[in-house]
Image (cartoon, rainbow, N blue to C red; front, side, top):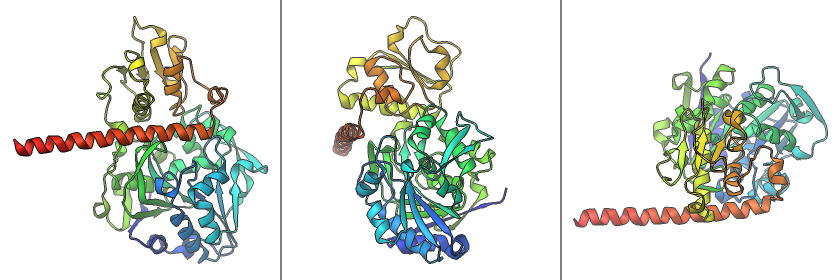
Amino acid sequence: MQKSIVSIVKGTDVEKMVEEALSLLGGVNSLIKPDSTVVVKPNAGHYYPPESSVNTSPEVVAATIKVLRKARPKQIILAESSAIAFDTFKCLEVSGIGKAAEEAGVDRIIDIKKEKDLINIPIRDARSALTKTAFPRFLLEADHIVNLPIFKTHVSTVFTCALKNMEGIVQDKVHFHVHQTDVAAAMLDIWSVVRADLTIADVIRPAAGFGPHPATYPTYVGCVVAGKDPVAVDATTCRMVDLDIGKVPYFESAWERGLGNFAEDMIEIRGKKIAEVFTPIWVPYLEGFGAWPEYNFLTENSCSCCQGLVAMTMERLKALGEYDKNAGITIVIGPKKKLPKGVDKRDMILIGDCLKEYRGQGIFVGGCPPFSSFPQSAILRRRDYVEMEDLVREGVTPEEVVVEEEEFKQYVDATLRQQERQDKERRSAKQSG
């Protein structure tokens, strides 16, 4: 396989950064054909403002539209399908992306969720249960798709950037299905049908913490990263923020399917070197389970996706004041040849599809990985959570989700402040001693 080219640009003028990033790839005119239809796909999945780093920066969106316009395309369309049950146009409004795109001269803004002209495409090499998917015609017929993700931590997929962002080109019905199968495999199945020609990643203030949106902490890196190969872009951004790519279970699969390179010796970096922009970010959910000794964890053979999800669930229980009430339960993740004996099935939480053969022998949480709130709901209510409709039937609204997530962030904020005080006291005691 030929080497992939990835450009890294650091600066303060975002439009100049985007233009330079594309220049290092050959220039916008070599990437975008004149008189073409270009679809720009940002990350605008949730009701959060620009300073949260939950969505792509409006500055990056506006800069990209202005730079793409220099290639003289016929039209530039901004398209998005926000997270399940969230209103796309409200996400675009709260995030500032909609206004920024309009002011930059975008020709149309399309809510993919509302599109009626869909084409069912069979996924012949499907690795998930997503064997046939409805995609909007305008997207399939576009001359170019430009992927505009923001880099964020993600407890269910380790992180989100180029590959994960294209999950947002399907409607809620398909999105439901994605979360009921192997999410990483489904994500790559979508890429096997619809591939972005170019990725321009927002790594200006990537989100650390318990991402993708509850308790995120923007960390200044100040970069735009671009490339035609989404796998190479993702691997490069991981290396920039010190996220061990060995913890990402789907890089190997993406490479095997011909979606791109992740090996460092197969990626040519142009512009800034990784060492010049290297900025570690906080990824708390990959630190092991020693922080929660009151619970029993069986994690052998488990993936980092389920590990991250369980770690966040533990902290969510603390934030809700439910941690001590449920102490002593057993949480099982990863494939197992047998389950432990002597545990009441209401006190054994089986998380992930690798354990579905044991459904009925404990509280089962379906998905690969499960939807982010499923484990918490299963522990609190002691019943199975498999279908997205399980939450819908409980009447959970997007607004209620935002309130709960804000409460969780306040808890994490307070915890971090306490840790900082304790660290300061220990340093002071050490110096005085």
